[in-house]
View 1 (tube, rainbow, N blue to C red):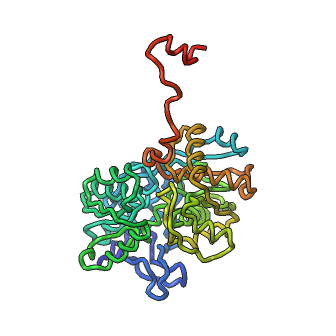
View 2 (cartoon, one colour):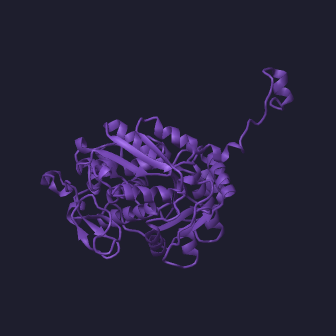
View 3 (tube, rainbow, N blue to C red):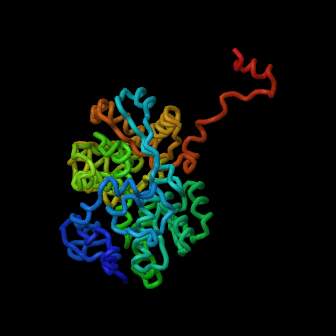
Length: 423
């Protein structure tokens, strides 16, 4: 299998190794995700000098996509190498009406539903599939709660790659359709996401899937780095500064840890003035193992069997749970969770005050934001960014029973008057 470091020197990225998050052991850049010494998870390590060559001018001269940050990513330095739908450049929306309802001074919504397949997963998939192609894989696959399946299938279709995506059989119908329409192989598995993920880990070790890049298994270190671009964009859109607080939906915990990593990197390389920030996590009460560990003051995350309306967050055994806890505690943040009715109310509140229709994960964020404010854990006077990671059209069932026409009338002025529309 090709190693990424085999590229010509002029084309190399700042990535220089894979490093164990537990024991610190280092390995060459390749298609591995677990430490050979302690079996801990690997993440991409970088050459500090090469990261330091990136400046604001070079970023601002780049494309209006996540690839403007290519100099801070492990792959994709050359446009011809990229497998991409060119995600990124999504809006940072000032949410003054929502802030007023919640009693906050300054609130922004980073709306990643504006990506090509309408979720933040386009960021991680662009980086993962670019790495997969550079590593010599001929087929791509994933385990998914829906949004990742949509994105992998779409990116593979654009690039002409074979794809095999595995999802729980009870996934929202809209996400099934959006995955199947791209023409790849879609496998529904009778079980939870954790069952699906375990199956994919087993398949990745078989001869039949030897030439397959599972984006959240054997190329997971590269996949996860795509989430950093959300943090980079927020800082750039705020005028190259960090928000004081950020609230992030939590499933595996990877997105939260990578946004935190992005903020740290920006300060280290001098792209922003170093300043403190707090990271807050939001989980669904139907699947809240990290929130539970935080509340109990524990470092170990106990797996749970997922339930609840927020299926995109239903990962009962979150791989990055301990690291999410560390990021939250280190920055002075918190993790909380919200129930199904609170999630629905959060979706409606966000839509009513900002015009953004979020999927259930966005409802989790808004509902948890309210809880954190009520508990005094989050400062209402501090500048805050919340992340909406997916489009409400993907999870219509969650609120469909709560929405209907205000009134039905005859097509006449009399009908309008009788309904009180002309009073």
